[in-house]
Amino acid sequence: QVQLVESGGGLVQAGGSLRLSCAASGRTFTSYRMAWFRQAPGKGRALLASINWSVGDAYYANSVKGRFTISRDNAKNTVYLQMNSLRPEDTAVFYCAATRNGITYDYWGQGTQVTVSS
Image 1 (tube, rainbow, N blue to C red):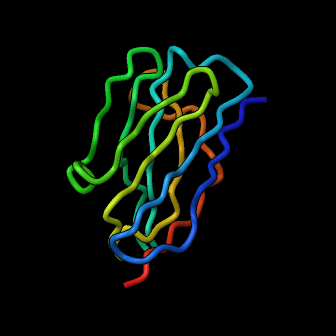
Image 2 (cartoon, rainbow, N blue to C red):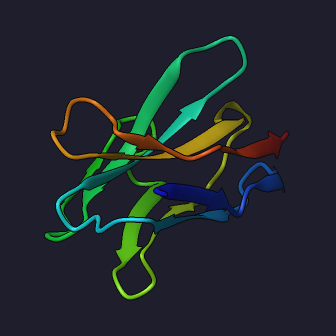
């Protein structure tokens, strides 16, 4: 059974930092691209960052470029999202996802809530 399990969310003050983790299990993800999305209340799900599990090249949305860093630990089968300089508008449910074709996402985590207070 394939699982993506996020952790690390919580409440933080504006300007603070959080590190989200996504533990992947149930299959080999070396041919997948892993991504972080977020969904704010009343809004659609937005792609924030992605990384190729094997190569390690990263992509960032303009909204988080320079503040967020995606990384992976192959030994731990875990993908991370380091979030710095958090803003109240970053408040959302953050999801981890995996795609093999780079277009459609095959697997999703259950999400973790991040709340940034002003």
